[in-house]
Image 1 (cartoon, rainbow, N blue to C red):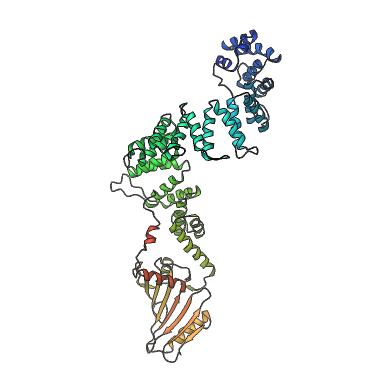
Image 2 (image 1 turned 90 degrees about the vertical axis):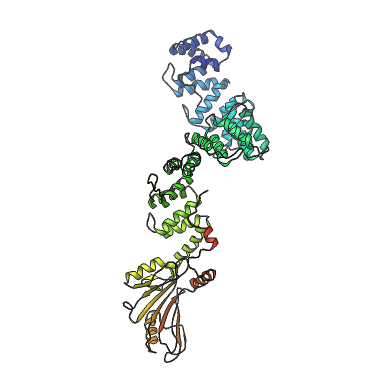
Length: 571
């Protein structure tokens, strides 16, 4: 609402608002002199009769006295009463103030319709601020009366009178093309008009046009000069842009010290982007002394303003930890803190955070394992490695819905090396060899599974189950395979196919289980040693393809190197 500060001299108020003619009236002048002397009650006594007789200057003045509480108790209803009297007589200042009162619901019932009526009356009398207000009103997209053409017209009228904010708004409209065709030349024209009035915002926007060559030839030196003019007026976004040009070496050589200086100028005014950038400079030791704790302080300030990348960097620091031989700047890794910051970064929409947060939920780091959350987050990420994890994990979850074949109480169609190892260990089965660098783990089973001697479990390069193969020593016993077959038939019914005969020669039996697992038992001849193998045909195809790439399980394909989960550099 348009008011003057209570501490503003009344003389300034009167001489600014009223004409020489108004001040020359004897009674009005007497009131003016009383007010100037600080005798506001006498001023009101002198002005009230004039106002009651219909003098618009006196009416407006009484309205201001009631609004500001000068000489009378503050009373917005009385203020609106006298402003209305003056406004109805065409007093432009009263029309403008009354419009503000309706807009804000001060002393009157709030009404955008009435506000527009009175702003329009003032604007039609050439009041630039009222014209600006109408431009804003018709521009708002939450307004049923939104009208870009009306907004443009009123902004133009105000801008032509030198109203700086209207000039800048016109520049933005022509630059963005919102409601009209993009016209960079006109945008520059209006930005220049604001800039030549030494306006920081106008200089900033004009600098932006020169930096990116919109409507003018690209000129980084000119852009830097304009950003500098704006930044020296304490405009934080300009200080940020100036710092960025120094950091990236645009328009001059790279200068990290100057970059740090201007980032700090913007950061100290609360610019979260500059706070984040200062965190990066302290983390890398560019232009400032390398100091991870200072980096964390700046990242934290930015994160407190919901800066997604700042949360992400804090999460990376806490997830990985930082070792310092002198122990002065060591940061102990904390999955809980990492989870907290990845979660906040993800909630702010940062795609990299979706994937990293999903990984923590998948592995149960800093939280309990939650595969459903992990899948949902992987699905939101655009990172190649996260997309692959989504495909694998979603297939795994779908697998849980259909898998029925169990070994050691685990659904083998869906399991992985870590899980199966734990379950085998619970059965007191002794490992012969467990090595993550090999495709297969081997165990001695004779003490636990009667008649057996060995279990060999094979995995993919990603350590997902492929097959489990038991060995039963035959000792020239041709009936052994029949005994094993009958034992399996108790669980899976009769086999679906048979080759050979039990009495003599090589023989095999096969079951095609409901979840896709193939179960096969066989023996050669004359050796009657019997083998039982559970295999996932789909995973077997994957294993064959991986071995074709390289027989070395530790081999990492080039595309997987590029999609490594922990990216070495964020920028």
